[in-house]
Length: 134
Image (tube, rainbow, N blue to C red; front, side, top):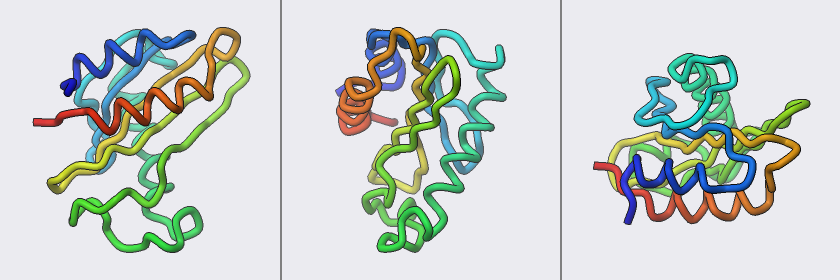
């Protein structure tokens, strides 16, 4: 089971991967980063991506049956992932289930011309399942 560094290295092996991070969406802090950042600053990117993740995970419009604070009880996140497309890339945010009070997600930035969004989504789901935080 990979830790943060190994997980990020695996994510960067995906076709078109430009950058990746593990982010705590409660604080907006990057727990680990690799590769490029869309705006040149990994910490700013983490904080901005955390806002998107927080809005998605906490609002009933996106996860009406989930409700509540799933991060407090180790439940399944109500949203699996979030995909944001831009003219030159894809941003994939994949929520990670943990056994402790945590709200962590994987953020993968893919080049639109070289990336394979379907493959990235499948591989990121696998990485999120195997990721060991400790």
